[in-house]
Length: 194
Ligand SMILES: [Zn+2]
Image 1: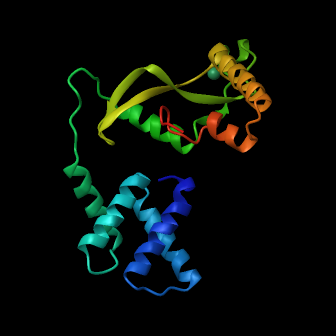
Image 2 (image 1 turned 90 degrees about the horizontal axis):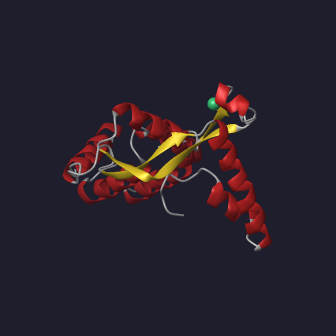
């Protein structure tokens, strides 16, 4: 989970508290949510939510962080899928970089490498984008995912140019700015649909 998941995670905790009939003051609930968030943030939000559903089905009391974690890993083991024979598996370094890019919303500090300086984009945030034609198996999530790369130099320049053109034409077509930011912004995982 990343910081943007905090709100949704808070809802999950509230739901559990209601199910187990726990009454908390706002301050208590906040402290509890923070502790549980820190304890569980290594997992993806979808796993945490699925875990909470299992907790409700199987446990008679509000889970400890460790119990919740155990339920999540058990659920993951159950639905483990092997890498398809014709696909390559992501390297641990690639997985880390994809997770880092996700946490950064696919945008990192401007870069002053030779390529970026020559293309005159060294004042712009670099962007992480998926390559449509390259997928690999991510063993942590058990599925094929588009492989992304950080754009530099001319590639980065083209990305900003495409974004500018897209925004201009879409604004002319009457799309609302908030919606556009969702479409071109980085809040999605590479390859994830709207
Ligand atoms: Zn660069």
